Image (tube, rainbow, N blue to C red; front, side, top):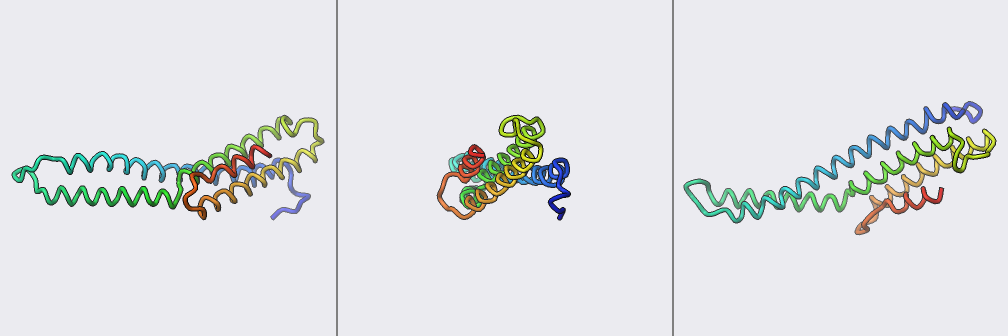
Amino acid sequence: MMSKSEWTPETFISQRVKQYQGWYNDKAVAAKMKYLSMRSFSVVAGTLVPILINLPHDPVVYDVHIIKAIATIISLLMTAFISLEGVLRYREQWKNYRLTEQKLGHETIYFKGGIGVYRNLAPDDAFRLFVERVEDAIRAENAATLNVMTTAGEPSGTKEVEETMQNS
């Protein structure tokens, strides 16, 4: 770890902000892919099951018992995926990670441009504020993710991240 005197805006941005932006981006992409895959399977499965169940009974073409077994398996998988999404909350994770990744990027632009809350601040004061705001965004995301993963039945865990970032 670098000592306080070794941190410069450039090193902080390259070694802390960019690192976290990359991490949040990777996590957002993975959570989005999981969410969309599970959701897509559930939509397609929900469409296929009634079709399979309502096929005309033609023992020459196919065995009805096999079709019913396939429909049952698809239904079970669809139910499992929908239930897992309610537990694993990939959609909320995706939103939390993406929101934080974007916040870090915007914060960096505001800091480098000396705009927004950084306008008219001395360089050292602006840098201290920048570090505080970046660390607050990371802390807020950690709290929101923990909340999403430990709170059952709530529609979204992104509210805390959004509120914290709006108040920053």
